Length: 415
Ligand SMILES: Cc1cc2nc3c(=O)[nH]c(=O)nc-3n(C[C@H](O)[C@H](O)[C@H](O)COP(=O)(O)OP(=O)(O)OC[C@H]3O[C@@H](n4cnc5c(N)ncnc54)[C@H](O)[C@@H]3O)c2cc1C
Image 1 (tube, helix red, strand yellow):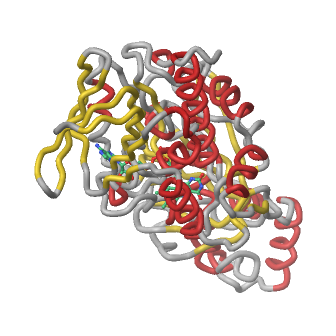
Image 2: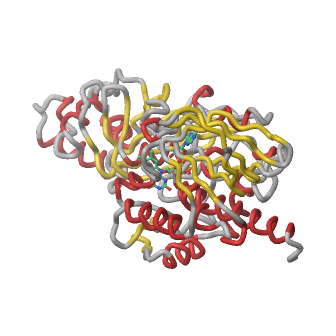
């Protein structure tokens, strides 16, 4: 016998689990279909296992999208289901949230797995059926219902649902079940995708200047990225750790910066590293002048020792004419690297791009198939590092929950 549910949630990740705890109980039966053997595996790994679930700036910071209206779209959804709304929801589930000094919000126990546990316990308590090891391979409209085909441990299975919510994430970090194959489910309803790029990811750069720096971490460095956008040069600057590697650069500042430009690499992106943000270029120059006068026999390439890491100093001085102390000070403050690529989706935390926003309404319902909804990273919206992506997962799920709730009330003639 075929099983029928009111709402089928495809993907038991962050958005799917939020949705399972937010759908009004009166709106009918709910089932979560998750291809993995556990729900919320990625959620439990977020924020280095501490669960950076939101950010105090989630209503003001830029969200990215190929659509010109994307940031506004994301902001409208998040304004309806913002950080206080998320905090109140998690508090109802027994989890307290607290921001740190940078505005990043974590559960007070600093364990991401506590978020997953709270959500899955709440889903179970609300009678949501969770089907693990169930890969949804095909969805078709059959009259008023959707027919879902699944691969399970017991073989091929079929399910019927009145509403389907695609919460299948993107293409980043495939070890968590997100290899991008689920976009085909949206495409089978004539949905189209914007180009996909990895975001929150390590960067490949020209390695000639940095080949002696492998394994060296500079903290804090100030890094400015510059890229082209609509014919204009745009820049963004952040402070944090930079780690030099054999392929280019990594570290928290690189990760955070990557959100701004991984879709712009074809037009040329450069990084400018300021190794000593606490000191002015003039102060570094004066120090070098005094040092040169005091130690005339010190080889030029050793002159930055004691000012920056010795290896960094040598690499920097290789880029300037011998004995040019002005140029040396300037290179400490503006060490340029050109970005040639990223380490790719397997290493990225988030996917830039996804299902086109023009193809969904303000309730995140498909304009192509009534009853089909989207929440989370599958859509062409991505956030900066720091809790913005989980806040989007929550807000988009809450938006869909409200829409399905209203639809049920309407069908029952209650509104
Ligand atoms: C290591 C890491 C750390 C991160 N840290 C943070 C952080 O601290 N803060 C933050 O805001 N964001 C963070 N992110 C990003 C954040 O986790 C994601 O943006 C968020 O989980 C997206 O939620 P989602 O529900 O859309 O997708 P996901 O959480 O990726 O869930 C999608 C689910 O769908 C399942 N699935 C896919 N296809 C199918 C199918 N055909 N049938 C059945 N199931 C399917 C997958 O197995 C998966 O469980 C991090 C990401 C990674 C990888």
